[in-house]
Length: 324
Image (cartoon, rainbow, N blue to C red; front, side, top):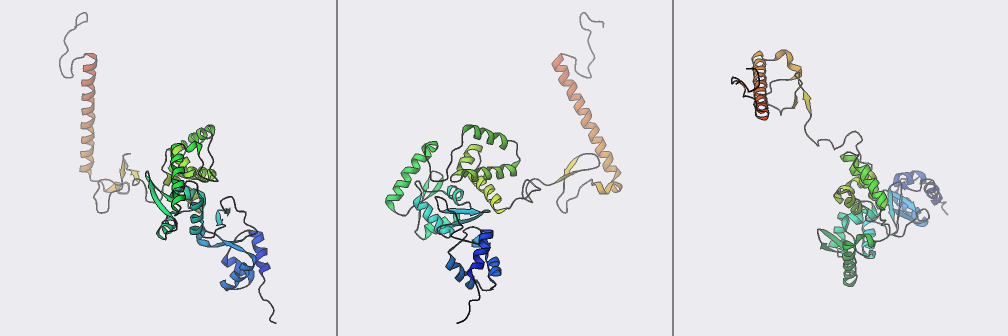
């Protein structure tokens, strides 16, 4: 009988140490270059594939501690008892008391869900209905769908007294005030990331709740949450490269100017001080002098009207009781 070359215990030992691992790490630990060999050994142990990070990570069933929704995460890698993201969303929407919209679903699974939800609707595994200004994803069964719509109407009218499902936590007034105060001290990028962080702390429904508290768009909150989860954060700028106004610099006379477009002629550049046309310089000085005198005359006219003084340029008349 041919002796066994690869041992599943090598995979178990690696995963017990790291909790999660990629296929390359598993093949290195097993000593095999074939994916099918790794899958055969994992099948005997009982494993799960992450629904985030394009399914790159693996863990054992004995290591995953799933919550009430059947979800578990380790180092921002997310696993589901139901398997893939599509299968997970199908189960969660069917079990949700009031259905989910996109932002609520993303708050639960912590990854983007729009494409997966649209796929489920196309395949008839879920239904979609527009409620107000957003689309609500519901169970395909007609009776269950009516129940979810009725629960949604209660939630939309009294959100503080109704729970969408496991994971939703309501914020006390003191914490709300602290969040709003700290939020006001941040710049644009920090506000988006902070809102995403607080939404993750709340869990299910966090994007909608934080967006309403901070007067933000739920999509902005979701974007900040996804940037934090994916590590896609630029630490040296507020906006992404290319955003905002064009850069400006000072010329030798202290005036700010924007960089001209290519091919556009400009009169002054700091690196061309020795090439300045003297005629242009004289014109600039004369124009500045005219503007200065114009401002002085305007100020004098305003002062004369306010204090009852004679207008500039007219001879003063002797006032009663004053020396002429």
